Amino acid sequence: MLEGGNTSGPGESTDGWLVDTRTSYDTVAGSYADFVRDALAREPYLRAALALFADLVHAAGGGPVADLGCGPGHVTAHLHNLGVEAFGVDLSPTMVDIARQDHPGLRFEVGSMTDLHLADGSVAALLAFWSLIHIPDDAIPTALNHFRRVLRPGGPVLIGFHVGNESRLKTEGYGGHPMKVYVHRRQPEQMSAWLRNAGFTLNAQMVLDPDGSSPGAILIAHLTPSN
Image (cartoon, rainbow, N blue to C red; front, side, top):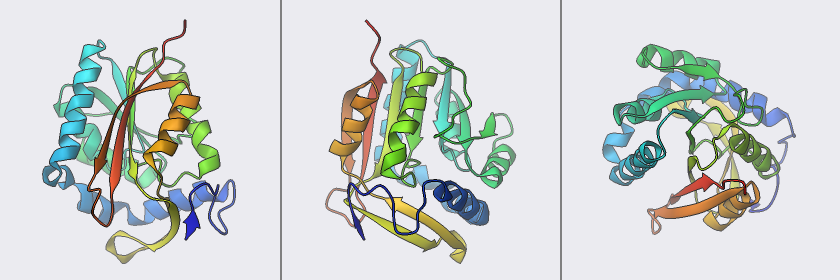
């Protein structure tokens, strides 16, 4: 285990983690899609957080909303059903293929949060729903700077992540397929500090299952308007 604050795990090079993450999720894409397809139905607190996020998007006037690290698109589709103009971006081409097959009326594209090919100020809101968990600490500011760049001033942001102080190498995943990804667990205070440093204002924090074996957290923020 690595203590919080380390930038990467053993053998996790500054660029190799992207290739490993893409390859791993290409490998497990079908099994992962089966695993999460109905997951939100069993998670009332996550649904409540997404409903609040949708309300914030509507209150801000609506517009395109980026689901970054969308996987097979189940959260993108859920937001669409809440009246949000959501589209998905994912590092894994196979995940994007499945998302397009499962949700043919929605937009999905391949991309990386650390090199986001979206125009400046082109999205009204965005979320990273347990999709920053494989990004090393030293690459988080790069991702959040892209978030700031593509967002409209005042645009809401939702970040979901595992809570903890360690990073763990995951070598086997959904369906028993091989993987090579580090799962980084972080404290809400650390994620909040990164968001503030990137120009966001924090609005709300929710800790999920704090007494359980796998706690999570959701932060809701907005892009601080320029003076």
